[in-house]
Amino acid sequence: MPKVLGTPPSPRFAHSAVLLEGGRILIYGGRATTAKGDIWFLEVNTPFVRIQSKLLNMDVVAWSKGVTGNAPQPVVICGPSGVGKGTLIGKLMKDFPDKFGFSVSHTTRSPREKEQDGVHYHFTTRHIMEKEIMERKFLESADVHGNLYGTSWAAVDAVTDSGKTCILDIDVQGAQSVKKSSLDAVFVFIKPPYPEEEQLEKRLRGRGTESEEQIQKRLRNAKAELERAKDATLFDHILVNAKLDEAYESLKVCCHVYVSCNYDAAANEFVQEARSGHSASLIGSKVLICGGITASASSIALGDIAILDLSNISGGAPGTTRGLNWVLTNSKSNGIGNYCTQHPPGSLSQNHKLVSPSSSERLVAGDLSSTRAANGFTR
Ligand SMILES: Nc1nc2c(ncn2[C@@H]2O[C@H](COP(=O)(O)OP(=O)(O)O)[C@@H](O)[C@H]2O)c(=O)[nH]1
Ligand SMILES: Nc1ncnc2c1ncn2[C@@H]1O[C@H](COP(=O)(O)OP(=O)(O)O)[C@@H](O)[C@H]1O
Image (cartoon, rainbow, N blue to C red):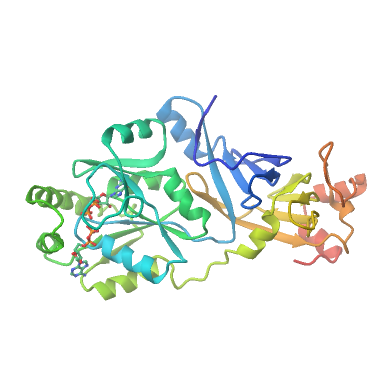
């Protein structure tokens, strides 16, 4: 049995599985315990899976959830202790609660006075965390200032599942690990103004949360972090947190606050309502979904044909596979039966006919858009 990484979808039946190029299997629909969120990718031979497999010396597969449109890239925020990461992230969360979600890390350090378990960190013990690292519950972990810190798969999945931009506050070692994964994040490093160490010391002392020994340790590590940040291949943006308001404005730009994403939640929900008894066929980089029934009141799928365009997908495990695009069609006026290439035996489908050979041939030719145009399909 291979090691399974990531958060798997809920159990389902009458779904379809389509083998894609690039070492992924697409899982669509089916009847599940929950009706929504129903495009998943099981990665069996992607670069991420190959690296994990080498590290673990065993077969590995990884789950990644599919989202439509150019859903926002996660943002990894790094910087030495005391630079103001927590302050800036806190502002972002407060001002845009619907847009951003914080990836809550695990740590073995003790909570500070105002820190809440499950909100700022999941506070745990070294023994438990080491065991969970062995069980591959973390997509990255590192020893920082004498304690273990790590980002669990569940922490990132919890945010990305809600359609929000995932913000990670991790150290440079963690950022290097994430860079090697297919999380496809934006990397931001926050620097203090000059003189750097003096400013950090002032802020750390002003925060008043660390012992003298901890302050000294953090200042020593800050030097190394600032050195590592010079790695030009790692960070997309370097911000100086001199004046808080100005740094915050720059961070908002890095976190795409001003960019409107075409993440189409409505289209997602419409097509993702779980259908059982549909058929799914791969044609080039598009998957044709045909027929099936839903669990909703009407019990019949609203749009009988849907085309899932995978030509612009990015990301992948850990986290989400983004960039899926639905082409929605309404079968009733357009002769759905002509567009089914396969149909699973015993299907529950109630409102479409099986394929006719001649129309199959047309589809295999692969030009769905012109076929659609010729038949007057609308999006
Ligand atoms: N690699 C890694 N680093 C983390 C994680 N969570 C927090 N860190 C980093 O650990 C360091 C110490 O964090 P913390 O104890 O909150 O102290 P602070 O930086 O002084 O506020 C910071 O550089 C954080 O960015 C994580 O999940 N993974
Ligand atoms: N631009 C700034 N100017 C002055 N003090 C700041 C600024 N940004 C943050 N601080 C203060 O510095 C201290 C450390 O900030 P914090 O957000 O806890 O840093 P980090 O999370 O990077 O360790 C806090 O007391 C915070 O109020």
